[in-house]
Length: 217
Image (cartoon, rainbow, N blue to C red; front, top):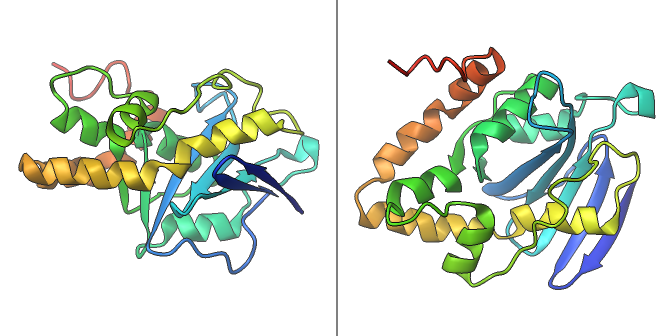
């Protein structure tokens, strides 16, 4: 069961419960999540957005049993998240990896994170948000108007889906720009070490080790 929405320069497919059988994203997929709030131990996963960087976004709505859903029982999506041959591109992966582990028990790998990349090479600024990076590196304006929204609603609006899709449609191009900067500054190996550790960092967050941080004094 799904719907298709056409917006400017993009196509959005909404799937309920899981990705359809046989859908391929190639060797890399951009991923983002929407949740009910910022505490994964309290706030459930509601939506997972994915794109191959081709102008098409696939949004998987995760519904709880109380709304006729299957919760985190999404075998096709889980298979993709765990596929060692597919690179997953995130922006602030730490949050999304925790959300996906809490909801599905899945350790997502391999991953890269454009926020970490930006912080490693764009040390001349503190503007590392997705909106800022898309504007400055790609010349693309994205809206954050629906950021604070009821993602747990059983029926999502066209505006919500357009916002959700915008978070993944440009990640491939953004990663290409930032990877080139990491290589230029000799920090790609350092970034890769950070990315390898991200699933563990997400697990620590879920166990409450954000404060106190085990890496602090």
